[in-house]
Image (cartoon, rainbow, N blue to C red; front, side, top):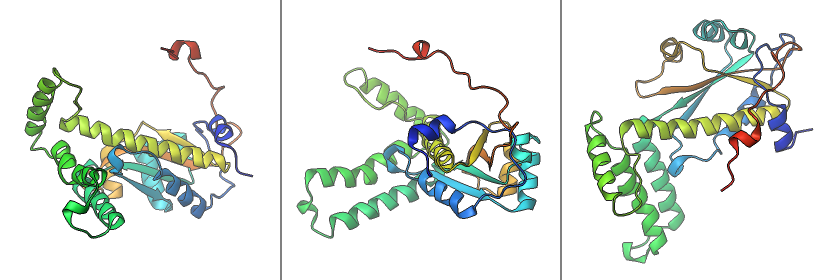
Length: 242
């Protein structure tokens, strides 16, 4: 029986050693990735990709690139979450096409103010925020928005580095959706930070603009797969009620 959200969150641990005598259902893992893409994402841009690694030879190469850590060495499958800020034009067009289809073909003056705002959001605002030229335009936009911010609240994260962070935040949200979904069906995961990202790029044949957000080992936890009891900073220290 599938766990509730709270049960899945409590069950999820970063499992360092997976059993070698159990087999993950590839289709079930794929379904968890389908849940991942339902995660919230800035401006619905969905600047992510998911590489579902099941080939044994590729897994062996990935293990080496993940520095030989046990979570990679014993993983039956891996999911690599990729941030794709470079695809902003394509993803903005997908959104625009969807909206135009939803609103239907009609004269420009027939759109409601809300529909006009949504269409212009992807036609004008997204290009204004995402377009850059070797980082130079981003700094110019940053300066302009800082000046505007003196007089009214404005969005200030307009540099190339800022937009990379935005894309990675969305990818991280998707990764968490995936791991909670896996936990809900009794599958285990381990997000691995320690890796040679250049080697992983070559193994997966990633394009220049793709950036590795997270490598997640997948399997069923071994009895000794969790290295210790869960520890969290006292809630009172991190919870601020205002």
